Image (cartoon, rainbow, N blue to C red; front, side, top):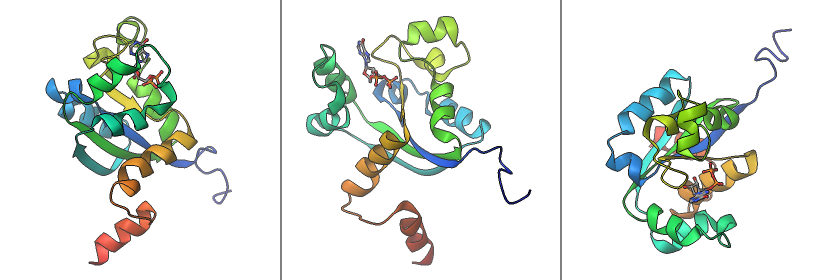
Length: 165
Ligand code: IDP
């Protein structure tokens, strides 16, 4: 019985977390990272990047036909963002739960302990991002950690390489 389902059936997962420009500007980074660590996530990677219009548009390509898209791209290019890869059992759903609903006003009303309730402003400026599925998590992690550097290796191989050299 120690071999199967010793973790209640939940899988070890990686997800992409981002502190958006308003989060960095508002000095929420340390509080957000505190909440991340207290909730049992390991921060595997962390990097500050500035998105240009092209990369922000590609990151949010699925919303390109929405009326809020031009403003979303402006917002996401208004300053640096902090990209993190988080690991934990059930990381994808648990990180989404910790950040709270998209609309920060709703977050304050219904999820007062969420990160968006703590530092978000409205339905656009909601201070953090989290992958919404396994497929998005894989796409978004490689968007920032493989595509940009041209690195074709998995994160674990990348980390092992770092460890060895
Ligand atoms: P999510 O970030 O909670 O997954 P999505 O629906 O994927 O929410 O939207 C992506 C981002 O686009 C949101 O985090 C927010 O910054 C922005 N956004 C979403 N809906 C609206 C809206 O109705 N008005 C303005 N901005 C929005």
